[in-house]
Length: 515
Image 1 (cartoon, rainbow, N blue to C red):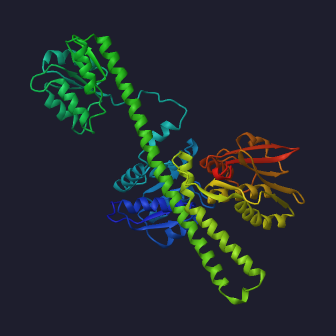
Image 2 (image 1 turned 60 degrees about the vertical axis):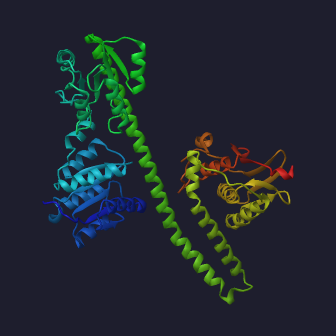
Image 3 (image 1 turned 30 degrees about the vertical axis):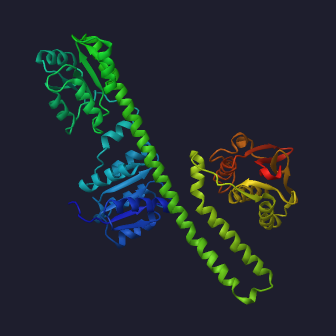
């Protein structure tokens, strides 16, 4: 199967934001022909009705899984050899073996970075067969049986730089059994090797050389972003501390006096190669974290965009109905107004959802204003009473006539909406949810209901993804409430027991002028 110049992709995932993310990555690579399917069943219909040059499918999907879709493709003549990538968060031995034997071309493990995605897609298109390139590697990493023979591992490379050939021979003789040894007899040659396609993993550099000494070579290496991370160990016949201090100032990691002791030379080379490997690993982890952070932001941005569409439709429809005079003076007008108001509140929360991410990483700056917390709480209680009445739950509210605080009005509205709604949901018929606001050194808000928090999550109630037995629960409501309270300089805590029920207490600073 020859490589297609303008391939047509089929992207399959039951999570819409991920489908769009994959599509955006493909478009960024210059591929415009991208068709999406929400599940395996839709994908099969697409395969029957169209023609595709590459398939990228999530592994775990309802109805038809990624593996089942792969098997279907391989059993259908047009797609028998079409590049097929499976995207998965878990790799189990049995499942991987099944995928390989079924003819998967490539695996993409979640979470993945855009760079990894581009590399794997490019490989698949350049090698359009149904053979997984990582077949041996995957089998090795997913089996409990160690290989019977040692594997060929590429040895680290060492560059020895010295203008005296006999010195190079001695150093090379000590190291060549363990490492690939490259040599250079001048600083210029050393720089050329380091800036080539296969730079060394470590450099042993003589200090005293004609034309360009080792200190100058080291300085130039450290000023170049492509070579700055290569560790440099100086070889010197000098033992003056001042010389070594200057060497370290230029960026060297160590020094060895000549003639080199074989045991010391091998030990120091091994140590600094190990340190370099650790640094490279940490750098790769950091790069991945940065890219995954960007990926998360992109997914959340798309999700917010998708939520805005139906919200806009609700707002537009409700406001259009309000313009009709037939609703004037009826209870339905009040209900429509409530829908509009609630929709705008939700829309504002969606617009502010990125702020929660900033709170999570500690980069959010609170834009505090002075507002009446009692007024905000009254609005929330009024809205929550509609749901409470349907359940036969009473919501009791008491507060000062006005309670001026400094914070963010929308954040407090979201906090109270979340917590009071949860209290109503946790209550039984004829029970009462009590909401109290009081003033002292701090503004104190108490939300109490007779339902007890499940014992297994009481200690983790405000932690991310903490939920127990609640259908559709994400474990993000109380976590986000805590973030929003603390972003305003407040505090939140909870007490819960089978006898006393649950009491959530929030504390905010009073507006200074009311003291």
